[in-house]
Length: 196
Image (tube, rainbow, N blue to C red):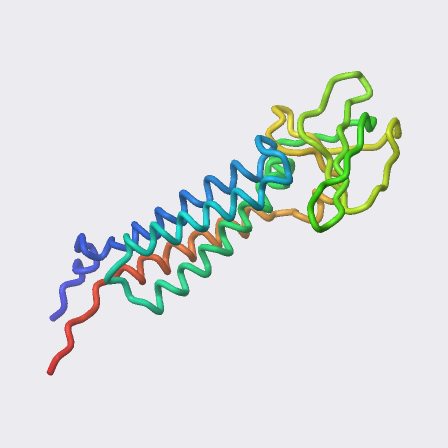
């Protein structure tokens, strides 16, 4: 008869190491996705995080089940990229409020895709933290618009229609995180000895 408590054996928790690598990567991606970094540097940060994760994973994850590890790593990669993209919209959904604003300055990004970054100020004269980033030059300097802002300036402001597109994204991130954790634990399970 098999022992039902065998699942609780400490060797079963080797997958925590892989889960820890993915979690740290997601936390760094969350910081990069907030207004603490300019929008142009997000790609650089995520590239550095993924490179560091690959190096750490190479040395730290020996002896894991290769198929489960690969599936967990791919799902973990999708989770980290999703966290990077959804941190700002999630903060705006949970804590943001609409405010009438005016564009104060406009700059075009230097990347391969044309992005326009607006500095906006509330009509009361209070500066709004971060930049409004759009794919097209929709507003002129001095033009009025409505934006959703996070009170503490942790997220870049967005148009209300953009925030609505990301509705309930935090719930999808939670499900993806739990699925990644389950796959990490499966990847860390010790292999059964081959019977000959």
